[in-house]
Image (cartoon, rainbow, N blue to C red; front, top):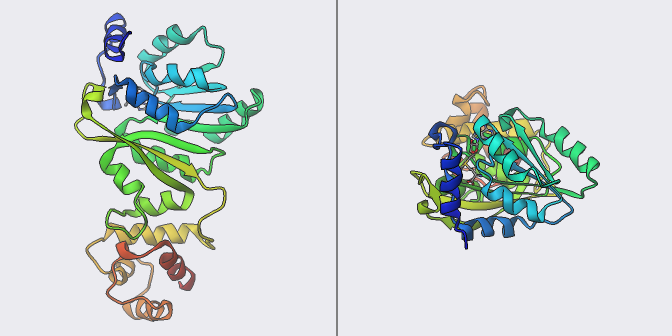
Length: 284
Ligand code: SAM
């Protein structure tokens, strides 16, 4: 059986490709990992799959078998010819040569679902690690019409994304992810599953987009602003962080609100739950 490592090396040699580190290129060569990603993403012929960063097309080949339509978004021009050569026979494949951060995904999903009469849209990717956070935040904050996001990312970032708000691993992004999605860890991936090997450990995670918000927010912008400020000044008490961040005009005003909410004046932001932040937000 052809193994993925020799196939990948063969394609790289044939097209004269060396991995471009600045584009986060680490190509998957472990078939077991690819199968795990595909199984976790739970794709059917009713699905539109958007793959971010298809690279040489390793994961794409498997996605094409299961999905109704696959749209691959790749920034590196060199990959476009390879992908078109490999998949020109597949009538459910399209590639967009663009920076994913610049693509109007809401429009794309709406149009393609309609055109191909597909029920759901799902995102699947082995992400370029240098822009993991902006990509995930774009996918969540644009409130796209998608069911799930199954992605390989750095393990360290995964720990933060899928933590429960208020847990030790939480960061500001934990609260955003939790607000929009239910998350799960799929698989921890060894460095030798890629060429070249990344410098950090990897993990596949799945974010199932919530149909209903986990918490009702009257002012979403203020809610996430408070969380951001409190995590930017992690070592300070929440009260001081919010005074310094300009949320309150002075300490007295902050103390008054904290007392109304029933928050300890020395509490740190990282130990607050979503509900605590929402309550605080309502009183401000
Ligand atoms: N999917 C392939 C695999 O698993 O072997 C490659 C994954 S590699 C970690 C990340 C891919 O994302 C690379 O092909 C890279 O060129 C592409 N990429 C980097 N920045 C991008 C961007 N802003 N928009 C779209 N693709 C990007």
